[in-house]
Amino acid sequence: MSNIVLEEGLLQTFAWSLYEVMDNVFQHSGADYGYVSMQYHVSSKRLNIAVTDIGKGIIRSMSEGVGVADSKVDSDIFMDYFSNSKYGEIIKYAVNKGVTSKGNRNKGMGLYGLTESVMQNGGTFMIDSGKGAYECNMAKDNPIETRNFGNSPIEFKNKDSSDVKYLTCVNWSLDVSNPVHMSSILNVDYISDETDEYYDEDLQGHVIHMRQYAANVATRNGGIKISNIIGNLVNDGAEYIVLDFESIDVISSSFADEIIKAEILYHRKIFFINQNDDIDLVLKYARNDRKKI
Image 1 (spheres, one colour):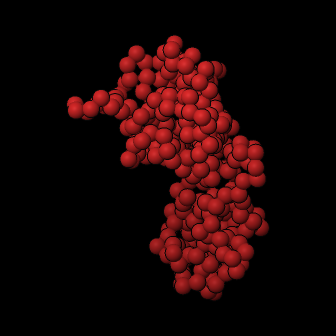
Image 2 (cartoon, helix red, strand yellow):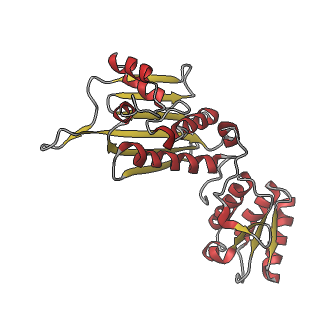
Image 3 (cartoon, one colour):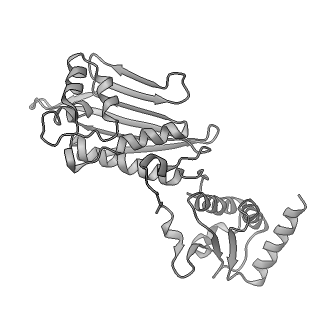
């Protein structure tokens, strides 16, 4: 939250999609644990996320929903793909809205919501599981692609057991410069709680307590960090942000410059409280200096 500024809706989209995919590991794969990795590429403004597990795999998990009374898997569709070894098409089918092998216990929104958010954002999405793969890449002329493998690229089998486990990897990227609107994907008014830690009930607004960031007030990089938090709060829907300087004795001019840049960028959104005369003076100097640019 303090390293990059995410466009409107991206913070909640990132958190929601990550929670959904991680939950899929435990709901569907039968694995005891999964793995998560993330990387941000500064030059391309791409945030890459991957979630992997070693378990049933999507195809076997879907097959377990065939013929079940309250199943949300269409048996005819699944068997047509399976009998013709169209494993990639099975994975593509699995991400459709409402499709789930868990029947009424699940709603089948997780992977669907993720693919929709990626398409809206202009990002990429890929699932490799067992003998199939599905890719959605909005940068391509034909963004949807499925692949089939004669053998699973990675599978595990214990010597004393016939139970085969497959590697499943859900890999997606988001362009942090493009907004995403969860409300249009879920068809509801979506309110994020990703920035609740900054919300103050008494002030009815978001507060950054600078004493928690005391080590940052002496440097420009520290100012950039706080400015990024401000940007993410604004893009997450905060009406205003209060910087509380209680217990802070002094700030650097470079730190103040970054804060005033944010104040100008997010006009009438940022307010200061509990700053002493010295801090107030440095902020006023930075504000006047910025007006000359």
